[in-house]
Image (cartoon, rainbow, N blue to C red; front, side, top):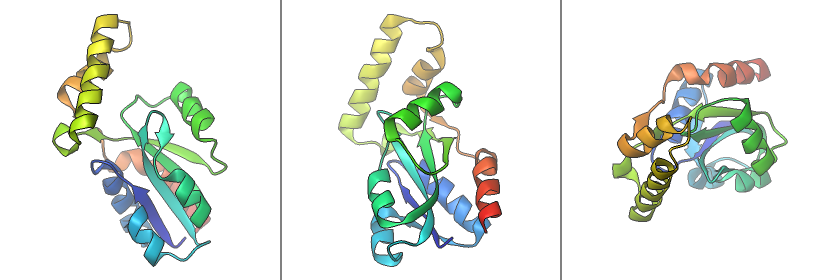
Length: 161
C-alpha cells in the first residue's frame, strides 16, 4: 500500500489517517495533497468524514486510486444498522469500516454550526427514545477519536501487506 488518503472537515479524519500511516509506515495525505503526490492507480486506503450519510471525497478517490478499503468517520453510534445505511448510500465496492469521530464546534463553519443546532432542536422537540446521546453530542460536542477504534481496519490492512 502506497498511502493513506483522507478528506477531513474538522480534524478527526486526519487524526485517524495519521495514526494509521504511522502504524503502517506509509504517508498520510489530504485528498488535495494526494492528487499531486500519489500516482493514479496506486493502492491506498481512504478515510472520509460523513455528511448526510455520504462519505466526503470518496467518489474522487475511487476514480484516482485503487482503494484497499474505506473508513467513514462520523458521530453516529456504530452498529450494523448504521453500517447498512452507509453501504446503501455510498455503494462501496471496497471493504468499509466506520470510525467514530469528534465534534468541535469551534472548527466548523457558521452554516455547519447552524445546521447542527437546527437538527439538535428538532431532535429535542421530537423527544424520541434513543436520541438522547445525539442530542447531548449536538449540544456539547464530543471526541471519540482513539487508536483502539482503528483495530479492525489496521488488522485488515496489515494482512494486505
